[in-house]
Image 1: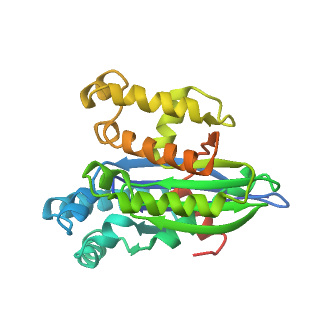
Image 2: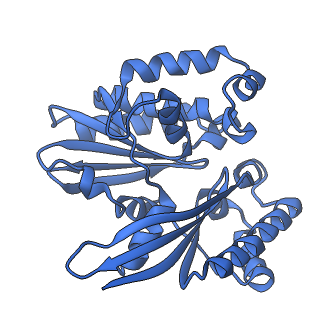
Length: 296
């Protein structure tokens, strides 16, 4: 007997918003299957407001509201039976974040929860990571967002430590990450990974997914530190306009991809990792799985 459930997740990030609709296939005696039915991404850069002026602008509030109305209609069309909407770094820091949440509930009938970095890391980690984690190895999981980066260390299949830092791509673009933050990240990575002989990185976020796609590699194959370094130099040699016209990057990806690559490279350098694996996972996948397994 096969049963089908439809769940959706809304991820309101600092660089973009996503609606993920998933078909969950349940079959007796088998693990449930999570199949992506639809993914819609809207480039509303909330972080630009939140990190520079401290509040979400009127224009972006309206754009956000329109996006949420559209998401609501899409969920209706897909016959979604359950959804959750989480907002991260930008909404955490905007002093009118709660006001925006109330307005969207009223106008678009979507309930949003603003979550902290620790919960964000935990939700992402509750995705399909256990399929990737070889129990005898050590992994540093790095999720780079627009406003923050979450680091989670796994060893022998268990989570050892986790920390969120205010170093995201939109913040870096606005030159809002001081040396002290970089020093803290370096110290945290080094002190948490020093006792392990070998550490492998797992990368998550829109930018590393794009870098992986551009590499043309098979899904199970990692990207090497050498490849990441040369790719960084190559991207850096192109202008913003060239990254759009020659590489076909979206305008809201073409600028943030550089600071994101820098974060991954530093994480590899400080942990001594030679490779980075890029599974297709993110906050929205984590929300669906955490909902299904009753973790949120």
